[in-house]
Image (cartoon, rainbow, N blue to C red; front, side, top):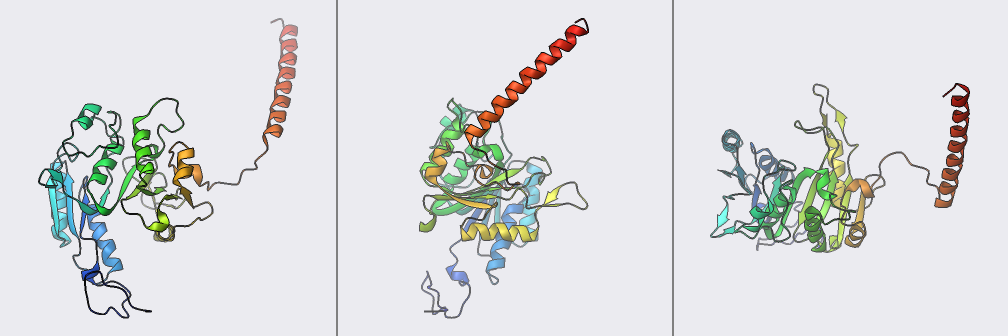
Length: 335
């Protein structure tokens, strides 16, 4: 019936509602295992408030932070914003604080921006994990990127989803190489198990500690049927403006809306978004870099291989002629 939504928790008629009431919101908990000052957690709550205007505190927020000073700021931020948050201190990979018995606590939403390519966690560390977080592969000490992905994935409920900001290399390292790469093997497992929902390539020079671009990897344990076996890749590398009072770039609200709409609509957009099948990713040796599939630069005139080979041969002949002339010149000069 038009204008009627089905309640998931036995509510009375919802005729005419544009949004589900608070009792029908399924998102209950959100966590950030590298929460810093709590910014992502707060924004998660604020984003939900925007879509559900009457939702004051539908989320219970959890965060863990290693630095004691930043931890204190995160706790203060929860109070200032009047949000229901629980902040713990400690190294999340070494000692996750949110547990249920001997297992990790499970969440509806997990989001994080961990240190990129964090070192110090070697293969022995992953092998000895007592929470079973790294079932898809042990990493080397050079980068914990996919260690964080696996921890966050292990912290999800069966219907949960996550978003993590990573270095661009996290979605391509090892692909196309002749040797075995541990990151590629974990990435392979996530694609083969159909956990990857999307990858968003960000513009460069957004972050204060680096000018390098990043990516946001979206993982969903329970993808909608229309998205199963498929991944959306968004190349938003040109969606930025130069800061007027800062040397850093920023993404405008218009660009944010464009990115969000593309992700929700889940369709191809020329030079911006592309839907690829898991099979296509496998053919590309599990390379998930959006720039490999979505080209947003100037159109390049493509030539067939025989024409290119002919041009190369012509240039080689021209090079031989130039070398011969140079040799004659040097001889005449007495060299």
